[in-house]
Amino acid sequence: MQTMHELANIMQGLGYSVATGPEHEEDFYNFECLNIPPWHPARDMQDTFYFADGTLLRTHTSPVQIRSMLKYSAPLRIVCPGKVYRRDNDPTHSPMFNQMEGLLIDKNVPFSVMKGTMAEMMNAFFGKSLKYRFRASYFPFTEPSMELDIECVECSGHDEHCRVCHGTGWLEVAGMGMVHPNVIRAGKIDPEIYNGFAFGIGLDRMAMLKYGINDLRLLFDGNVSYLKGAE
Image (cartoon, rainbow, N blue to C red; front, side):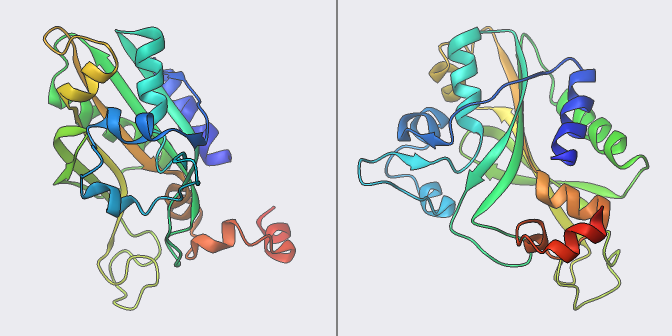
């Protein structure tokens, strides 16, 4: 929660508002409006928790972006923090985890603004300049797409047996990209007039990096001795 509030405050300082939405979501908002039709392989990547009626536990906070576009139209500048759910469980993944996504929609938004925004946010959060890298990637709701990696704070790339980075020296903390025109259309905004970018950050990984936590599960286990020590 401290990490979420700190990042939200940083983004509010950059002119963003905070938006929230339901965790029990409809397929329409969680997938279809995000350029992920029923046949799309990205649905398998999400490993979704479905209910019998076809509704689901949201796999990202991106549905809040769609709902906000439909409600407020453009221009729009929001961050969407909250819990999300996927079938995953290891030292760096949890079936329930915390995410913050951001969305900027305006006229003539350049690619460089997205990269500058991410760098500014990371520098402000950590209070120093860590090594980071942008890698080309793929997401169905953005084009082009990138991922942001930060150097592993646990081992700085010096331990090939590190439980956090698995010896790579890097931790993926964000995915981002220029919003796909189909997503802008789904938000009832004209992509011929407006464009923008979106990003998603794993808040739990950000907390792990900042506070030197090497196992994500420590944030959720409810270990009273550990929590008292963290105070």
